[in-house]
Amino acid sequence: MALFAGLAAFPITPADADGRVDADGVRRLVRRLADAEVDSIGLLGSTGTYAYLSRGERRRAIEAAADEAGGAIPIMAGVGALRTDDAVALAKDARAAGAGAGLLAPVSYTPLLDEEVFVHFQTVAGESRLPLCIYNNPSVTHFSFSAELISRLSAIDGVVAVKNPAPPADQVAAHLADLRSRVPAGFSLGYSGDPGCAEAMIAGGDAWHSVLGGTFPRAALAICRAAQAGDAAKARRLNARLEPLWRLFRDLTGLRLAYAAANLLGLTNAQPPRPILPLSAAAQARVAGVIRELELG
Amino acid sequence: MALFAGLAAFPITPADADGRVDADGVRRLVRRLADAEVDSIGLLGSTGTYAYLSRGERRRAIEAAADEAGGAIPIMAGVGALRTDDAVALAKDARAAGAGAGLLAPVSYTPLLDEEVFVHFQTVAGESRLPLCIYNNPSVTHFSFSAELISRLSAIDGVVAVKNPAPPADQVAAHLADLRSRVPAGFSLGYSGDPGCAEAMIAGGDAWHSVLGGTFPRAALAICRAAQAGDAAKARRLNARLEPLWRLFRDLTGLRLAYAAANLLGLTNAQPPRPILPLSAAAQARVAGVIRELELG
Image (cartoon, rainbow over all chains, first blue to last red; front, side, top):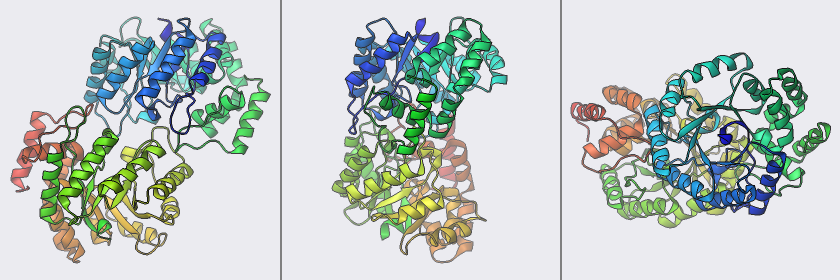
């Protein structure tokens, strides 16, 4: 399934201060990703601020993206919500709006138990009939999936993939081997956290869920294709060349960096949803400097 | 200000599976708290599942509570939201619906920076004119307030109180003394996390923000009044007597316990919002046993 193999590019979702999505901006971002020939588009991921957008605006964003991609590039859409019934409704909307799959995060306020997350996924998959990718990202959802829970979830009809945070380079092969032994054949094992994803793809990960790819698709694709072709040395060389950018990810966070970059590239004129503040002028100048230095775009 | 002195009792907010608030159930809970003569009611706290309820339902809950309390017991309402504009709207609603103050949590998905939280509070306080209590509860908001940030926030017009997690018993006096030196006179220093709050009140805390008080108001009030009267020995004895209940808080969590208790007491017939699951029959039997054993009600 193309949706869960290779580079899944996660763009921002430009919106105004009231949370109204800029559909033309979404189209420009999607067009650029499609032109670069990413394998799939991860719309409304964490960097796509799904958690901050209303149900109606999330649907508008998916409709614009699906129309612009025109079936050439499959779209996975974030369908996470605090409430199970809301996540079901969002997954149904995503399917109707043209998404080929959903990315389901166990968004939490009250800390959730494993059984609660299991029933949540079972309900959303069963009621929506949208193929789902498990979104394991404790830094935003505050829930961490054990290998046992991923294994249980992978047996649910319609749960077809997982996106895990990339482990340290020296642990990713063992992480992959362990998970492979616990999930059905064809279940996609993907990774996120861009600085660690080159190694995850070299080790045989199925998919790289990438904020880098949503912002600088050609730079991410070059690394991804080298890893997929078995040229680990080239993948590592290209990855190491991005060190100034990885420093920006660490210092500024991927989301704040992605907004500044999209504006600097003239693709959008958008800021993150408040309370998240735009980068300072000095930080934006750093981003502009790295874009020039690395000839990104 | 009565709102931020003594026992603030935080009840659940009974609602149906679709998130529609049971206004009669809210009234029954509020009546019971008012009859027990708690100092204030903390509606729509974390245990009041504010994060899971729509703006309209949150307003309905406050209107029912304010009408039932009839001005005799002041009401503080949770006004937290991921987006700043939503928190402003909720705070305006709360004020219009009869709340005397708002409890503002820095609800987060993308981890927030101190400056972002500062501007968020400044905006909500300034635009709503609702007196605000800072809600510091990293276990649900995933943001931790430093003493420096609380100090900065306490200088904002309309930010009048803070609710901190109760520190360990041997640290609470120092914690209070440090904060007192950093905030204006009259700024309320309150604590939550029931098992540690007797010691916080003994040490001179201004307010006890209490799930125990929202569920078993007489048990909480007895401890609170003893501590306020300077009878530390009595407060500690009453607190120690609740050890079987503290064990339930630790094993089952306060929220899940509070729902089960309200149902067992015949006050509500409600379950937490999915994905949070009701307690198992065995766990409910444990709760019933402790209610009987301690003659709670």
